[in-house]
Length: 462
Image (cartoon, rainbow, N blue to C red; front, side, top):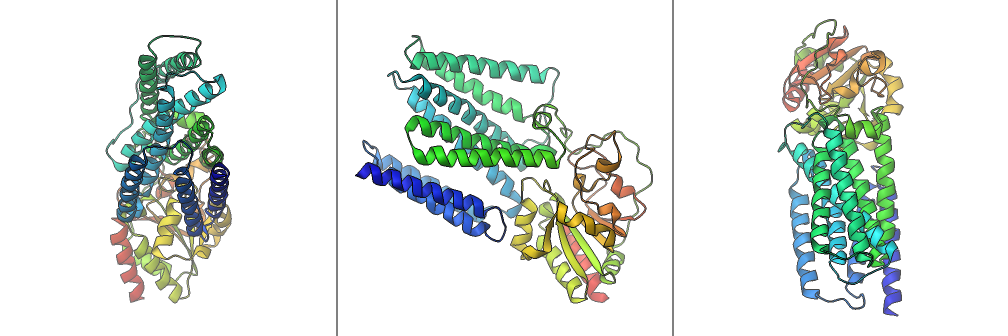
C-alpha cells in the first residue's frame, strides 16, 4: 500500500513537472509554471522519505536543509544579470548528483543485470561531463575565466580522453555484471576522473558567443543523466522528469543553434568566437558617426515608431529600468514603442525577456525576431542598447562572414539606427559590425544606464 502511494506521488510530481515546463513556454505563465514545478519537486522529495528500506533520515534532512538554505539565499541575492551563471551552476549540480548516484551504485560489490549497469555507467559519463562542463561555463560567464583555450590538435586530444573514458566505462560495466574481476575501485576512479576532464576540455575552447547553446546542451545532458539513473534506482519520477528535461533541452539546443545558423558540432568543436571580443582583421567601408544623447532623444521624441533592441550591454549596465522609463516617456508623447528580442541575445535563452519583465515592460510590447523584423522599415528609430552580433548585416549580406546566414534583427532597415555602446570593440563573436558603419547609423558611446538617463533628460526637454 505504501509503495503504491509513493508511486502515485511520483506520477503526480511528474505531471506537475510537465505542466510547469509547459507554462514556462510563455512569459505570462512562467511564474505559475515555476511554482508548479517546485511543488512537484516537494511532493517527490517528501514521498522519497517513505520509501521502503530507507535509512539515514538524519543525513537526508540535514542535506535537504543545507541545500534549500543555500538555494534560497543565492536566489534572493543573485542579480538578474547573473542569472545565466546561476542556471549554469544548477545544471552542473544536477549532472553531478546523477554521477554520484551512479558512483554509489557501482561501489556496491554485488553484481547486477547488464541493462542496469550499462544505463548506470552512461548516466555517470553524461552527468560527469555535464557537471565539469557547467562549472567551466559558470566560470566563463562570471568572468573567472576570461579567455578560451585553443591548441593544435585539441579535438584529437579531447576525442582520445573521451575514448579512454568509454573504455573504462566498459571495463567498469563488465566488472559490475560479474564478467570481469579486478581493482574495481581504481577503474571506477579513473573513469570518473577522465569523464570530468573531458567536460572541462570540451568547454574551455568554446567562445562567449556560443554560451547560450552550451548552457542549453548541458541542461539536456543533465536531464538525460537523471533519467538513466532513475532507471537504475527504479524511480519513475526521475525517469519521466529526466526524460522531459532532456528532450526539451535538446530541442532548445537545436533551436538556439538554428538561430545562429550553426550546427551543434560547429558550436562544440570549431572554437568559433573564442577570441572573446577581440576584433578580427577585416576591412569595413565607411566610418562610425557619433551622435550626442540630446540629438538622439530629439530624433526619438519626434518620431512615430521606435523599436528598442536590448542586448548584453544593457544587462551588464543594469539599464533595463531606465530603458523602460524612457519608453514610457516616449509613449506619453504619442510615440509607438516596441521591444525586439533576438533568440540568442544575452547569455542564455530568454535572458532579455527576463530583464525586461523585471523592469515592468508589458509582455505585449515584447516581440520575437520573426514578429518584429517586418516592422523595422517603418520605424523612425531603432534603438540598439548593447547588442552587437545579432544586428550585424554581415550575417545577411556577406557570404564570407563567419556568421553568414544567421537570422538577425533588421535594424539597418530603420530610418535611423541609434546604437548605445561602451566602446568601439567587436562583439563576442569577434567580428566587426557593419551596422555601426552604415550611413543611417549613429553611435552614442557610454555606459547604457548613463546614456539612458541622458536620453530621458533629453526627451523631457522636448
